[in-house]
Length: 481
Image (cartoon, rainbow, N blue to C red; front, side, top):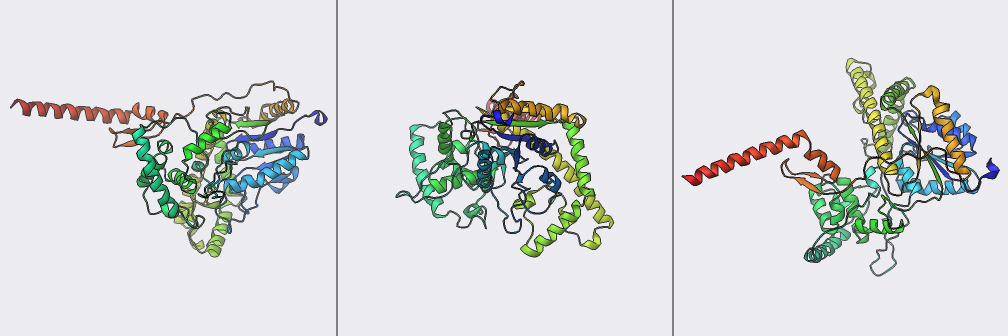
């Protein structure tokens, strides 16, 4: 079969944590002469094998793995998706050049996106002209571990009058000078730079001046996205919305969530699982992790970190973003002599339940991300579903269907099953403020419709109408006197 292959695809295995992604990737790698590229933002760090659920040494021997445990968590606490992408792409190219199958697998879906689509923005300033602000659209920008970091969908045009445009241009120019003069000199040490002393509402007002299109799509409380957009503008003097329009043009003019596809041929599998079954499976997995020494692993790392770094743990950076640290925070701070006390056991049990809850919630977010960013993407790459709900039927429901689909794609044939349909609707960005509910802000039509149809809003609207009628009656009585 291998001799008859024409063009090798890039294979991707998606799915929520606990669905069996690594198992399928290894099996496909063994059967189709592949190598595995791990796309997990936590498994890149050395150590902490239990909490990050890394494949075992024995599993790594079954199939060549890449990009696991290559970052020192003590010396690099701000690894970016660009760092990952720049390491992964040469590996994929080498694997393809050697006639082997690259298999991308992992739970960090925006890492996978960075490999499949060209969508990242370069925040480097290039001295290529008198203004020294050239923009390179090759897709390389420093983006932190944060969903807000990836470029979002553009779905509507700016609507302002000519007078508004003129005033906005003047304000934009003045603010651009201010932003550029005061840009952070050391973003690694101070992630918010010059924005740290400005509240989110003021930053949102500034963004409304320089980039009203983007501002209308970001909630005033979403500080990370606001700062991200202001950084783009302060670095380039170009609104993020204009950059995204250029990306859409490079993707053939369609309004894509991101830029064009990187590879001509891909095969994407989504391992699905009944949510109730998955929840139980995840709870059981957490119990197994505890039996294998999870708490001792967290204690050892926590102690070593405090000794080497001489500081408190920042749960927004590096390995500490991994589920487990924050949930067991209070327990980890206990002296060793207090761990087996009533208080210690209570904090341990609370941490265990929080860890189970966080893991289940994380799985739901992963599923939502796959639906929104892989299936609903205009011009999306085909995604094929397999079902791991019944693990006793793994070969029948997961492995064999995946092998059949991949075999057909390797032969440049259409698989015997259709890809998954997107389902649902693409997010439509419409900025609304609810004056009835204390000025709550909504940035999508779906959120606005859900809010206006909610019982809470309807009750508030009913109270407001009663107050208005009462005020009108009082006014009428006063006028008749």
